[in-house]
Length: 400
Image (tube, rainbow, N blue to C red; front, side, top):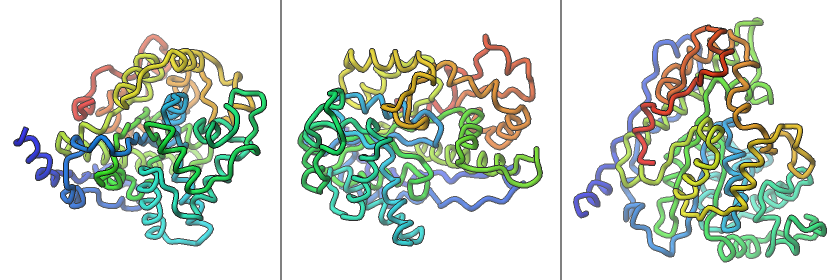
């Protein structure tokens, strides 16, 4: 045990630097922030595994947009022991825009906000004001059940009398007390591009204090599904001549480089940190939802409730047409046939678009067990052939 403790405290310098392949040099992209410092981890007074029982427990779901993070977050949103926040880093992003902050200002604000969230503290009045406006929008009634339920609101959200206008105004004391005293676990669903430095390292650094206990679910989806879906909802647009897919090239390169860098980061961490991070593929959740439910709840330290099992089975066997006004917009509604959602890209994405993504995301595809189609329309159309494997290299880099 002493040897393990020493290794955890002294072996945190092992961060790998992402080496870009030559094909990534074909187009120019903004240089990613370096991930391989690790000095802040060396300042930890104790390993994460030895946090005191009084430390506030947190779980952070990190993924790219259109990777199934809304469904994954909603699994925790439906647990009565969880204080859930849907994409909270939208708040410092809006504050940054309103106050015309530069990127450095946003980075500091986001880190301050995260550290506060991990302690159930909401001290910054600008951030608190945005939280109230965002989570009380008419189109967002159910993205956080904890924020729409007692003690913050007089009625349960299932009650016909429930109305967000009847809920208490959000003050630091009211919101902080509800978070800390009513719920055992805080769960945040965060998109990678909103995290400063686009790195899980930023999350771990914000969790370094002795009174904060964090775990991370690193959610990954097949880029051939994630990238076209991102384009369709306006995360990026195409550039240059038609059929050149310059926007897709740029977006694929950036997102897959971030995914690979974060996987390499986790791979190089000491076990005491790696033990706090779980890798999850969306395809596994889509095809085996109840098995994954039990697995991620065990990781989070939550009991599996029959009500959540029933909800998840139902919501992953419906069609998108089942979404209604109570589910919010199409982006926040999680009702969909899960198998169809995992495979829809095979019949909707253009073959040339798929070829571009496979070229710029080749290593991520290999590491995550995603089978390339190499231009084969027959392979794409064959529903009996899964394009992802149960065994893949990156799976062995994680302890969970």
